[in-house]
Figure 1 (cartoon, each protein chain N blue to C red):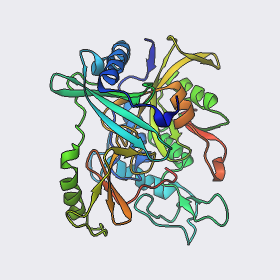
Figure 2: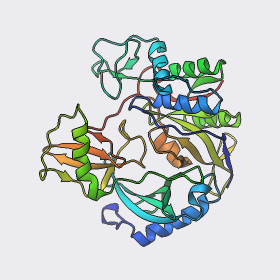
Figure 3: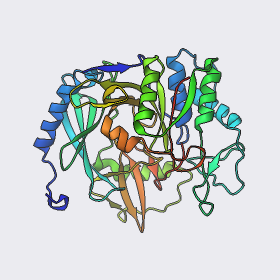
Length: 172
Length: 210
């Protein structure tokens, strides 16, 4: 099937794939993160360095603790990277919810003395899904960005709250 | 599942955008028994100070000074074509090796520049088999991560250089406190790629046991 006409996975299908993956990881070094963990939430991410490429980050909880995440291709359901806690009582920091992203954008830009892009409330666009590409500002697909349009520019707020005026590449 | 890994690697977060080298050094030094300094500044800052004092290059006058890669006199900068702007390292492979060996008091790490993904990964796994975490320069020359384990011998594995490999465990100083398992095909195709320019052009660079 042409990818452009292909539907993205449903939540049910994505979570089924995630449950199957968790069974495998429960017998690995990641067992602390995946044993008894259930898929809780999924986040759609667009690869902005590729054409029509999307993935889901599925998060897992044990009780109220978020303990693991996996990456699932949004079209073919192939499971990619897995990430998990290593200590029994560990917990992954939660992603900033989309509903809080705009407020956080203003908070972070006000905190940064070097921030030079003028932003006015009500005149900023928020991309409907998270975005990611490998860059200095985020080395891992588990930390994508909210992408805001400000005039003809974009600014990026990582899901852990770090703000960047651009995404760059270069030597380590 | 069958896992091989170095026990007790403790993840640390890189304190600044350009501190991935010092952060991976901190993780490796800690697991190998080096104590953190008792007095400020932070250990990563002290490790970065070593880097800036021991890179042994000469920064070109027209190289950029950015938040991602702040200028220092011995900074090594490269450009792929003479018409390109310079792009500068924060922590070169060589200074990272020197840093580890200096703090460990022995030549335990070496820079290994490999021609392909299989060979580079085998070098990292050799290091892990010797009880030393490996360090990989990923996505060309973009980022340093600690490679502290691998998954092997399971269904769906791929055989190369005498190993049946399923995946690679990394500690990424830019991520959260966690271990990441990267499936082998993704590691080969997306994480490992050759350095685009300069001394290591066309090679995949890892730090492994000497």
